[in-house]
Length: 163
Image 1: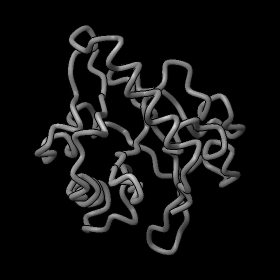
Image 2: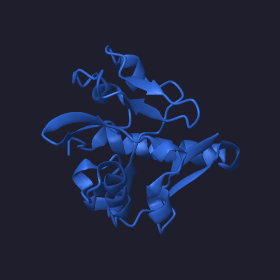
Image 3: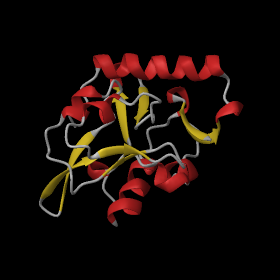
């Protein structure tokens, strides 16, 4: 299975990933409705791509009382059944990475979470700095991936991810 890897130290903060994501999913170029976000830590001149890490034990899924979140076992992506979602925001609070958002689409609020573009993430294709990669799980050095996840978690703990 392929996994999505984020290397914040390679992110230039260009926001192309946000724009291509919003266009792919909602047919409009808008970082505000993207399933991936670039959070800038200005005092450190550091950009962090924030998106669903498709956790093995996904707390967002476990927290969803409506059963609206589920795992796509072909891609490993967490998906949302918007018809079942009751808008309680438990998934937002449960995500340790701050990667679940609520967005407004056609005057309706809905949960926004990366679905890996059904196994072919558009954001990876446009990331010139290679901060975003989608590779076979065995090709990622476990220590490097753990280090990256720890940096993202540290950023999520101290940052404001309310948009």
